[in-house]
Image (cartoon, rainbow, N blue to C red; front, side, top):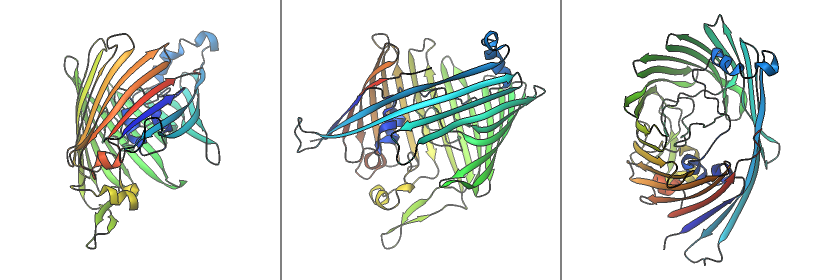
Length: 433
């Protein structure tokens, strides 16, 4: 008999993945279709001139100055119920967790040539000290309206793919399908941007912290050139620095025809930062590196969004040149768990998704996402029904259906020991100010 798990998520839970304490975090964050991060600041090509457009709305209040202060308070608790073959329905195993989260931000523009943005997040409960994360803290300034500078901790994203984007060299973490407001912690850096016509040239100097803190971190350089060619944008970027395998990325994206868009990324690197695992002659695991090899990755994506916004879909293929023919998940999880990284274990992946907004009735959405590792023939199918009422309250019913042999990526690494997962969620976004 297959195991069935019912996740009851109750009250104030904006992101179920935030509260999960198990290995389900990765896939839950990836497939939670209604993650709505607060005040995302991707701003790939935003300039001070664009901020001037916003400034006009506030000039009467601040006599020419633009100031915005706000934030969000959210929280919740999660209840997990688990049934095994020998358990009765009325006697499940329960697990519970809770969290309170606050985000505060300041957006100020003292004059037309200078702007400051600061954003931080605080979460409770915490272990030994207050869990505070500085998401962003940077200032914008320009020289003669021709060269623009951004200094501080700022978001840097080169993502074009809906889920996987190997060209985002600084942060490969998977994205959430159908969510355009995903937020990630920024990097301490200096960005110089020179727009010319419809094109753009930028150079970023980045300080990359070590895992143990900000002492003896790396200095990285990341140039990027964006050129508009008709209805397409062609970009070339790089990432170089001491102890950093040099990498170059190429991007092409634009409209194909009608409501269809194409996105493609190709990455070439000499060496890899990853730790790899292999079995020695005695059947024991050992790690090794691939420092002196040319490696490459490719992502191709076709997406569709109707003019009304009712229908959305995408199809993505990803080739990972750092994959394995066969990977011992069970052994590695016990000895070198850090070597297991989502969507990095196989060579070929397919991801597809469709979403129908206002399905049958207003604010009732139907989403279906399928992911598979073609190398080991494992995968997961994720259907979701979501209903939003009173603008801030969400009710979600979803499921995970896995397939593949026992020691494969989606069967061994995601939801180990579980055949079917059913999740029921109730969330409220409150406290925006």
